[in-house]
Image (cartoon, rainbow, N blue to C red; front, side, top):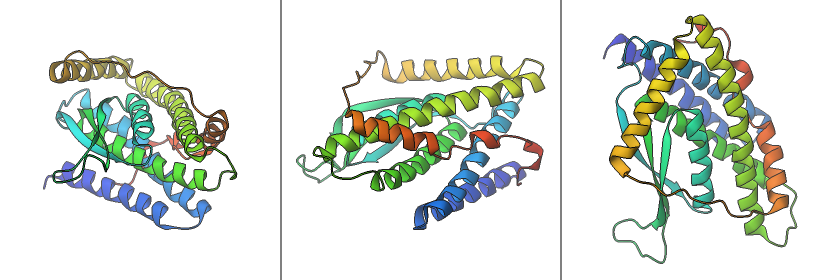
Length: 250
């Protein structure tokens, strides 16, 4: 294994271990600490690897389309959240409008929704880990949300929508700050490289899927949305912790 590949695997192991600890603990404060560290590393690594990509187009791996199964319940709403997050990680998500039934399964009992993520391998890895982390936080926050709603299902769908909408807004702002800083540090070469990367992703999506249809948004439960938006505002996305990349663990 090359030194660069070994270094990357160690970094991914560190992030996965932190997220696993966040998922396994029953203490919200402890989970937030682990998730905060994981997201800080993901954000910083993304900038670092994109800087390398400017001179080495193999730094982010191959441009691929990966399949991902989003489990029930509310798989369609979660898939929408993933597609919003994908844009902050320079990826693109195509959703299958039909629920997925595994081979040999019953069409009356689908297990979830299959989506297709197009992007560079490293960006997709980070997106999937980020999405998993935020799902854990969303579920935990939703469990602690005020109970007693008459329309529980609609409340939860609204909560998930509000949560991922707010997280995406926060990530977009923090990513722009980090990318602008990287552009200044590279004498204006970083942002044009990102534009090139986004165009390559768009071309790959068009070549694989052809003309796509946008999925319209439906009205959501206002109470659920507001509670989810509030939880999303407090979710750990690592945005304030992108700093000295020289001190990142190797």
